[in-house]
Image (cartoon, rainbow, N blue to C red; front, side):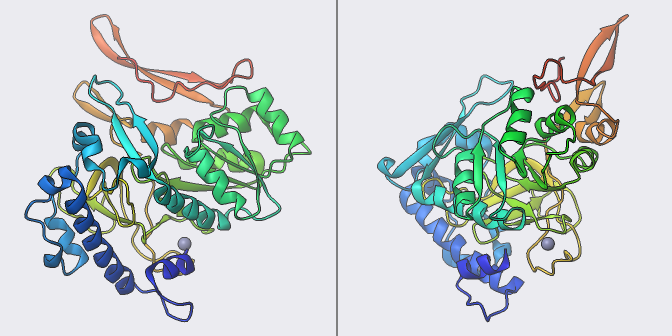
Length: 392
Ligand SMILES: [Zn+2]
């Protein structure tokens, strides 16, 4: 993605991309974002009181800015807007699981959506080419949804796309793989695994690449898809708040390279809020550098990750983000113990044929026990999605 980022930060092709050039650009865009936010948003005017762009000299000065919490978004919504409502082309409502709190509403302008299409266009260049047929198993019916923006990015590469949406019927999908000669799939890990299990390998299976996103991606699950289809699995990290696209693996699949010209990422200690050194796990905090409608400044994502130390074999100066897990969904408390569901994922999906599992906390003779339901069949051609549905 280096040439793309060079262009975005104002370097020409002959100039070398350096960490310093990226940081200088990020400082400039951060100052612009703060200025625009304070001028246009009643929420940010109050929230960023005392934060003056002229006091920001290096990107580490970002740490003097207060965090933006999910609660701030729920409570303020439209007060965070930095453009007129007439410029908003898409609103996404994110309901909160398990609470009765207000949903989060995220606003995008057409320019904000274009940033995502452009990133998908660039990020997919390393995964597919003009000859490919890409099946998109992400929400795509609404204009501006993740699958729709991805399809638009792929169309710029001249790739044929099949925007399907969230899958339900595996038999139907198997038929599409055959009839449309699908060579690449983008989807949620558990869905693609179940499709691989149910479809299997036939003479006309042509899957070369798979891009997984939107959930924790265990190595064991990826390996099973790769083995089944003799294909290569890539990982992506994104969320609605950051405009869907965040970071994607290059062909060396070591870590995910972030779109550093659009988003500034920090990894912070969840308790102290202090920025952690490379290699240490913490909460991912994002600042959008180019978003117009609803910029996010130091937003605590609730996602956990870390920067990988050392360089990617591709030789880029861009950072490499390790696998991301989701704080709320990937952790359960049981008898005072914190259980990390991602570790269960790694262990359980290495079992040949396992398609899904469910964790339950059950009462047995007055004691609480953790019960695992393992599912080795995908039933009547229908997908199951029990994983992570924790019954208490
Ligand atoms: Zn790389």
